[in-house]
Length: 265
Image (cartoon, rainbow, N blue to C red):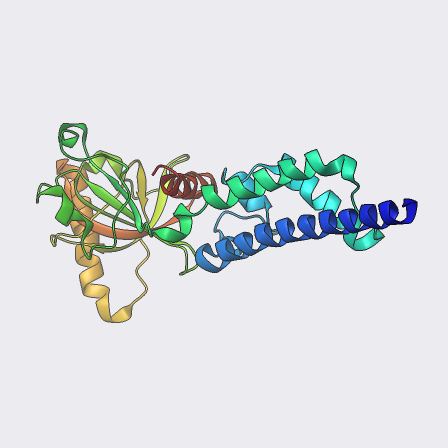
């Protein structure tokens, strides 16, 4: 009888250990899915020092570290020290089961939908459009603004393209732009400035006056002249496109908002 009880206890401990391993594998699988879809290792504001796979998820507010650390600690004890949990630890393992379940369920929205960016509009358009609403996968996000795009802008975010952040805007005040670098302002590599209905930016911007394509030198000079004329006259920028390149804290804030949109619905 005593031998049977001992055997049952050992079997139970092994089963608990296998459960912990399975929970850890489930979390790891979801984290790998994040990397495959969002290329977290290529976030543009990351420091050069190597981070653990979960650090970015912590920073983005997607996962909390306390329960994950408990899960990792128990799993490492099993794997590296061959020490299996006992029946006394059932309650703790049940908590880890619930943590894993909630983590998987709370992140399902990241893989069931695609957000291409963020749309910003003036306050007088709020009656029919929600600023900050995620862009759909439509070819032109402005199709959803009933044709009234004055003062609106789109931030297109491409995680798979090394986290390129493209800003497009229409009819934006020239006071939001500067040809010289200013502390705290967003910095753009502006590659299109013309009268076509392209799109723009949300807050303070810096136009980077660097033209490198020799074939387009004449057109580039015309853009610079139009920019100068706008600065002198106070006219609005009718349209422009550019890539956001700095500062890192602004890149981080925009990307964090981008991820927050996945959790809104």
